[in-house]
Length: 260
Image (spheres, rainbow, N blue to C red):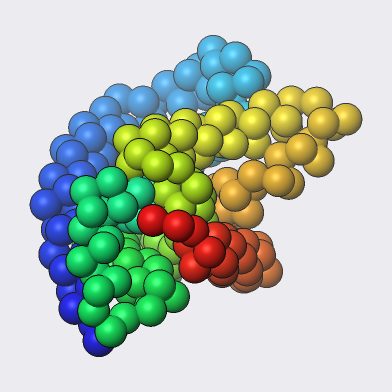
């Protein structure tokens, strides 16, 4: 039975397409200012406060890879992409319980484990649409500007982002099972992703507290390493996948035992 999966994916179409369009417009704006910033890259980098350089991972701004890794991906992909998936995850269970839709769903021959699995499986749609949209606009925009983008590195930055985005969705999913209102789960989910992103960046400012960042998902997805240095850390991606599966199992365990 895959009716839930198809229905959930269909419900995600509108928000995914709207966000993909927004990402395309914002990314195009960033790329439009790149030629002007390229000439003053060193001065701009020197003018940045240290915490902003660390937080955004500013490095080699004179290259299209460094510019994308320092401006486009930290904000659009790591922060807002993560927030979106946490928001989606936060509405997966609590919303249906609140509207009594879950009662109707479970009246059919479907287990609670299957409900979780199919709702998580529906994330394939925003993952594909958002990755494709941002990758095409970045690669196409760079080509229009006459810049040569390493296609392999660009593909890898999106492929390795999938585990990170899934972890963000998993955070929202756990909250969706624990809380009674979808709005509360969604707000707490996106807020937690934002706070974890800040902790990751701020912890790098002090070596004594750098270990704190190891507890955040964004620590295991380094865009600069991929785009600027062409280093692909599959070990970190594996850690994120394990974290995602752990969150899904936790949500399933709690949902099976929850009285709705």
